[in-house]
Length: 117
Image (tube, rainbow, N blue to C red; front, side):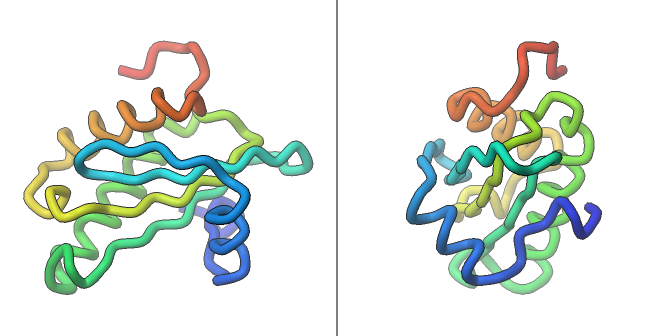
């Protein structure tokens, strides 16, 4: 994922948490904030130590980055997203992570009407 697509600073995370809306399913919580002044979407990932060890947490983040790379043409360009992984995500395959993330993003209404899969 390119640097322009990432949210890294704590202040940016906090702004999305405070001003954004949240949606969730069993595996992920997604905070969404619409920004009319940006040209592409931005994503911040958070995987707690409660989810698993470092190997597990890094695998989940890799899966999430790949998911956003594959569905990037369906995402609205004016949105900032924070994705928080919950414990059930630790045992999921890539295909399960992708379908679960698409499900949450549809609930959040940040996917365009093109076919996703």
